[in-house]
Length: 288
View 1 (cartoon, rainbow, N blue to C red):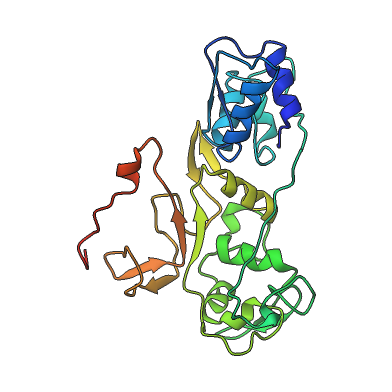
View 2 (view 1 turned 90 degrees about the horizontal axis):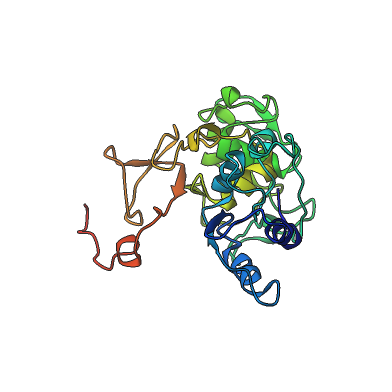
């Protein structure tokens, strides 16, 4: 759900938030929401502290009845859960979108034009048939198909269920080993012959929720406010469970005890840390 500024203001003006209340919502909308609270109505809205906890926390705050509205950068992943704490809505979710998010796929300027663009002959594979390492073939059903395979191990032949995920499939390994198979047309002379790593934001990030929604991936499994299983091959934020292992090299800042890292890695910044702790200036010892 993408909740508009108008929806946010309506909830506040009619008294859904009391003095000293905490309003949880998107971290990416923090600046805008705080400005709204400070300027509308003209004298500003006092007594409300905005907590940029992320879309997921905003959903749970609504589910527990702590708040009736939430500024979010995506639609709700679980409509029935979000409104469970409000007997008036009886499980009905309502929202308004005021700006559309976009998903950008970027390449190096040095890459061939065949690796770029939105035309049928360029960009990620959308309907080509590729041969697989070890035999067999696979035909793509669209550019989202490529990303679903790489990030979640789900190809077009499988239902959209976590139980059907195969992160060690022949088609996923073939894509990782052959850079050119990721694209609709040949990329020509490229410095890369294989895909080294994929990256996602942390599980609570608004960007992660939007990415899941855009690709139509299975919803994360949750127990209370804790995510216990994600659709991604790398596992949870602190895990490194991708079965496709990539040997570490001199460019890697961290490495597993066996000298490898999973293909899919999470960029996760722990919450509630001071700047000097989150981004220390002291470098690690080489090789440690």
